[in-house]
Length: 432
Image (cartoon, rainbow, N blue to C red; front, side):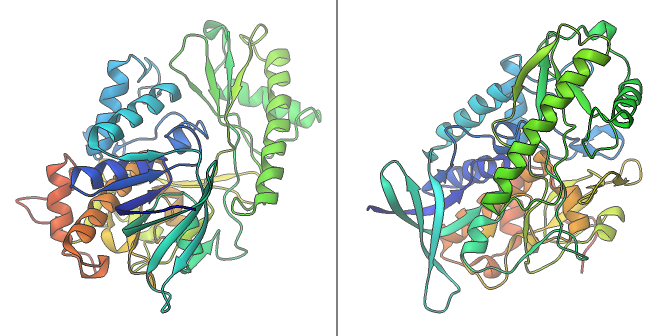
């Protein structure tokens, strides 16, 4: 068993983890990024969630909100010819995201450790500081420690193991949004394809005939980067807890069953798919929601929909409240007014109780309803970049997140290319 020490350890190499590690390393911190798969990208690669949801003001693609690491990834994939589609401007190739993410990390000086799974957290006697984290990999059990930790697991695994206060799902019954196994069909005759509405009508007819029992109310698909390939985000797995390994296993099995059913339907009933075939299913089922960490501030959906502004803004977004029914059919969507966006305050990244930990990505301190908006990849990248920046400042300056001058985080993010909506160096308005 070995033990190694770093300035910052980032746990989870998904969208938030990539940005957190790159930001921390560029700030001069000795940074380790630990990932359970053999590649980076998380939701964008392992879960194959595609395309990226909007990173511009509501209904106005001329006002971009998220830059920084997100823009660098877009530029890298664009140079590879693997970003964008004439009919799907934010579609990307998962293989390109793996490479672009790795390049950014290595060039920044991030130490990468793949095939390594989080297993245990050792706390100090007071239960407020993480002393070491135990991982399992091919070398056995490995203890790693750092001055600061960033939880970018997506499921708040590190925070939960450390004893942070966490919540799950909606308030009424703790059920989380359903999971989805994404899949892709290749050799599709795009010219013969019906519209989304027409495919949905055929899908509903097949459900009435008892040929499909997927508990989703419509067919959701997107164009992929490759010719003749269509990406489906249609399966819906209900009432499973993504933090319970037994239920997660059941969800994977159910997702594949639904995918096979949908493939048969597409080939038999939908024009353009007769000669198509299942190109791939995602390596892992997509998880919309699991744990959320209770932090110094709890973000609400009302604030997001009111285009909230905060003095300690560290990221922005405009993705709508988008709640897939945890218990059946139906999806709730509530959009911001055109041209608007919301701020995400630094306090939502700071968990209660734990002193040397920051949250980078979707499990920040937010209600179930607010989480449904800030959970998408571009926003997770922006949050992760802020968490990594703050972690480096804390580690190098020997201060705790609650003591950190947020202006230093904002200045560093701005220097890294992030745009926080300041006018003359000051926030637009001051939040509570």
